[in-house]
Length: 110
Ligand SMILES: [Zn+2]
Ligand SMILES: [Zn+2]
Image 1 (spheres, rainbow, N blue to C red):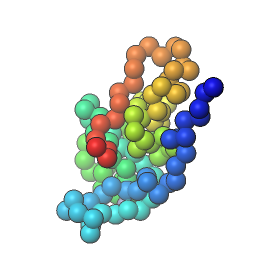
Image 2: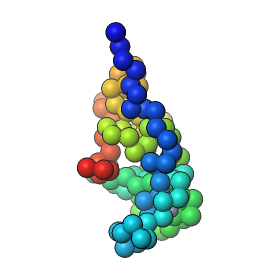
Image 3: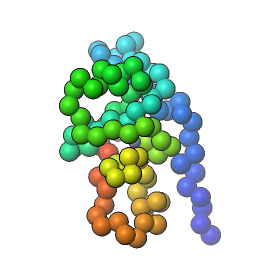
Image 4: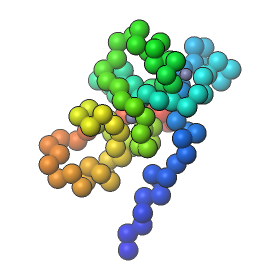
C-alpha cells in the first residue's frame, strides 16, 4: 500500500511574496507570489510578486521561474532546466535519466 504524498496538496496562501524591507511583518508584502528567485549557488530562494520582481531585478540573481505547486515546499529542489521546483523523491525518483541530484533550496521556515 502506497500512501499518496498529501504534502503536495496546498493552497497558494503559503506562497506569498517575501519582500520585507525591515524584515518585520508590518512591512512584509504578503501578495501572492508570481516569481521564485534563486539568489546564488548556496540556493537561497525568495518568493516575489510582480511588483517586487521588478525590485529584485535590480539585484544579481542566479535564476528565476514562475511559482508552481512545488515552490517553497519542504525538500523542494530547484530544477534549472525545467524552470520549476520539484520535491525530491517524488518526481526525481521517476526521472531515471537524472544525472545528478538537483540542489535543494535552503532557507525557508526552518
Ligand atoms: Zn511583493
Ligand atoms: Zn520554485
